[in-house]
Amino acid sequence: MAEKLRVLIADDEPLARQRIEDLLAKEEDIEIAGSASTGNEAITQILDLAPDILFLDVQMPDKTGVEVAEEIGADAMPVTVFITAFSQFALDAFDVAAVDYLVKPFDDERFAQALQRARKRAAERRREIAPKYADRIAVDSRGQTRVVPVARIDYITASGPYAELHVGDKTFAVRERMQTLEERLDPAIFFRVHRSAIVRLDRIESLLHRPGGDYALRLKDGTELDVSRARRDELQERLGIK
Image 1 (cartoon, rainbow, N blue to C red):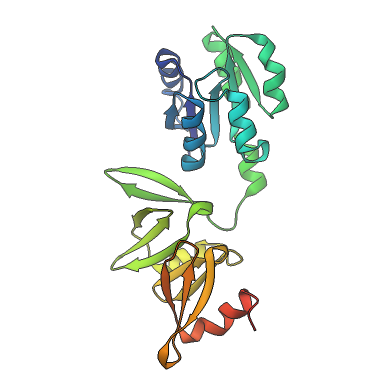
Image 2 (image 1 turned 90 degrees about the vertical axis):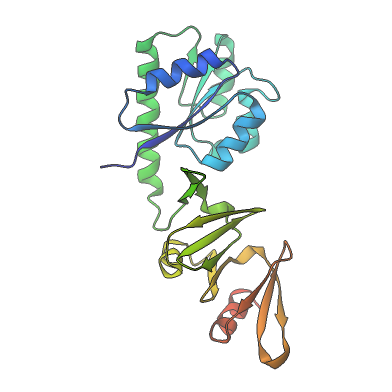
């Protein structure tokens, strides 16, 4: 069975969000990933949840839908359907690469048409990207499953039967072996510096020489991790250090 398309709904009106949720509830290939009621919340949710499809209200507190799209960047936006009470905003929506727009009040048939366009574009995008390596990792957090975008992972450490994904000041446990995670990650971006640590290369600030010939590294956030002697030379080469 194909992976479900993940949808984010951003609208400052609770009834409007609920209506879209109700319309999506009968779609077997759709999963509602989250919702937002302000422009800033929408930005956070887009970055945290990496949805496939976004229903985005044009007029919201903090930032308009168009400003949300401009801040995220058109190339990084999910497949987006704008929602507006004023048809004159449609041109602005298409300027930031919307796949469709809905003018309130819209009927079920018009919504289904917009969803079909979004679904088709999201499927095309998945085929275009077809990543050899993972772009997100599912983790269990407080009784629910959430998705951690790989682009936000700073480093990974082993912790018994679990691996811990370190994302900024947050840590997420995932029941996967380090070897499996290493194989799922792009080696041009991540490097296994030790049997118990995988690091995003652009997060490394410096290499540390320790007594006895041991090495460690310091990340930009101050975290220090051991570097195995077997991986030291390759790491230096990857970092451009002779």
